[in-house]
Image (tube, rainbow, N blue to C red; front, side, top):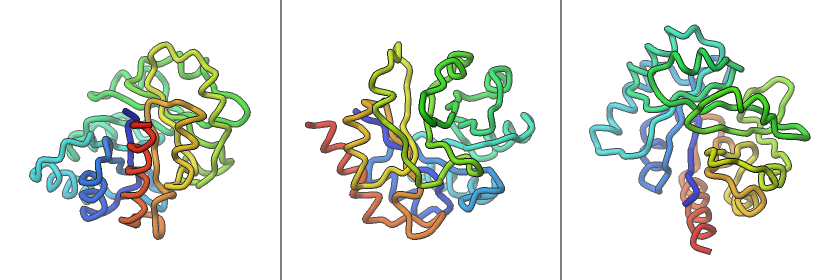
Length: 210
């Protein structure tokens, strides 16, 4: 079954809805330059409420260029199960965290396998290249580049420009372990469209059954 991560969550209502619709991972962005930035205090309140309600989706914190102690403190304060690294943090940084990691890299005309091979990450996320943004750009990339690769059991997630309309195409072309969606199910940055979230997850499950 294709894992679904809904990222860029900033409020309890959106996070709860994504979980109830069947999202496997819920992402909170702690990168201040992101329009989907959420403070650790706000995220902690959201995750505490979700866990109290029995949420079984994995909670993911997205970091970029934070000192390791800041990342560790945020992981603990927000009860996060996974840290996603978007700032080019090295293998030593990833190993020093107290939780499994998702290592993110952008794709232009090829997948940077030699970079990913340096890590022993829980999963790897491939996003579209943008000269200024680390993610959430709404741009896509050539998903077929992943399908042709020998993954060797690696969990690889596809991100970048995914929507309810094109997510099945991405799954067919890339055959990824999971998909990561943010801007493609939003009314505006940080505010999800409930119908779009539900539709995207329904389309992924329909493709899985097919």
